[in-house]
Image 1: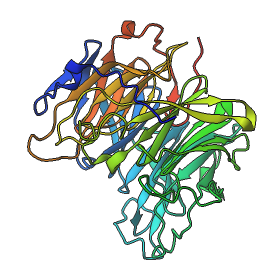
Image 2: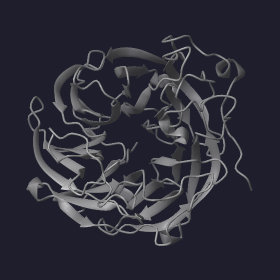
Image 3: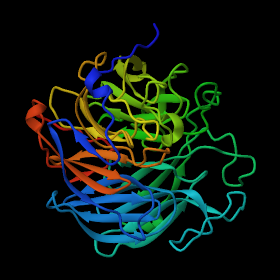
Length: 444
């Protein structure tokens, strides 16, 4: 059966395009803070990690640590200049990890861009000590094949180390450190007591058959992002032309137990999110690479969207079964880059609710408890940056953390307050640490 749309669109919402920089929202979401980017960290904002009263925001020029003890008045604690797109970020204890996926002259924070055709070029993982939030200290670099576009933190079962599942793609015969075929991920092991011993310990091949060869969908040459659910020994990978489900009970030897494709509507499998019970996966399609206007009538409701899959069966017989698509029900201007991007669950026992970034499409809160009929229950967005030309901007990641939504927008850090009474059962859980691609189970 061909996948059918399950958008929660309403005619009024879909037809309302705000003016340039005009803020519009549903009644249950409101902005309570915006802290603009500050030089030299005024490049593209990327992902967010959280720990205690701090938010850590990646930026193509490095990373910023914010004190969010008062969500309505975030304060910059420190800025670390360390260029190397896209600086995907995670934290664990006193350690912070950054992904470098642009060829650099060396592994230092003083490096400059350099062609990947040069053997000495460097890409990979950087490790920082953040025990002093006002003065992070760079302690280790680990080079990985094809760099590190994103990484996913997976704690070891014995608690003595963490693993980083490193995703990268686009190999070339011209790149000495990124040769095709590149059907693998790199696994970096970081001993917590001696992080300077961090090293690649495995490069498992996830696609022995080479993965999807490409047509309407990007050919698979690695993964873009992986989300792990360590408590359930599961991970879901968004791998360009393939979506995969993995068993990660052996942290150094993940096994693919199911694989799905959508050659009709998905262009680029970008990211994945489990529901709290691990019985569903939301995959996102980053049609246009984040730089195109895809939230319009021309593209329609099923492309550049989310796809909801149920996880059926048990053990190695678990399979991913498509149920529906979700896309924001508001039409965007042709000058706005808009596509499904990074989001997280909102803790609501018994329900499946997610908050998600859509670049200039803004922040959407939506319910996928009924896998076949997802619906939006809240939104917040700025109008287009320009009325005359397509301009990159908007929110890269929007995550729920301890009662508020934090968004790494290209205009800076946005903090949104949500009326949790509009989400029956929602709870302002007190997480002490949150890396969204390392899902943590919440309980009633």
